[in-house]
Length: 241
Image (cartoon, rainbow, N blue to C red):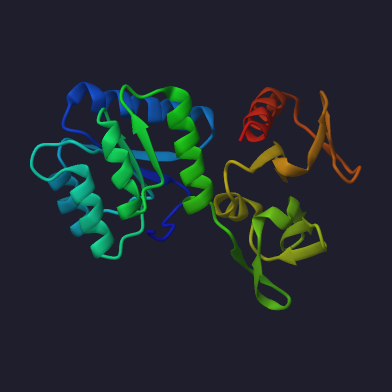
């Protein structure tokens, strides 16, 4: 899997059928936008073009590959990438259902039938994001040195005199990193600003009201009124997986 160069999920769609390629790209853009995932999407009309791009340094987190293509097909491309040691998440797309049986040979994450169904593509993309892309730990400067923290242990983040204070499930900890830096490091699906200066983990929100949220432990955080609609949308999306 490529290293996280930034917070964007890099996705490549490869299909030699223009209409199918456009549909996959449009659905992917729509799904990632609704789910609040910053996405960088590239399209390729042949497996050979995509392989050339990767060999030249292009990096992706998720590949949507048509299986049946002229010349180098999707299965052969996946095998070539695995031989190069590339473990990028692969979602196969094809009208040939029998090919699904070969997906295990190249450790494909999902196999979707054409024509693409939005619900199935959404599940596949979110599965790949959570399994392969979402950061498991972050490294932060603290009074103890460079400390490893799991984002899932962070309840919320607030400003501190020399940086930020993180309220963890194990207690508070301070870091010199600014809250804007932390926002770019943490998984976008799980964290959002409920207030201009407070970054909250959606997993810990129990109640959302017009001007505040109540966390699972009973603590109350303020909510900017103009952020309520987006916060409600993000919370519903998070709960739906």
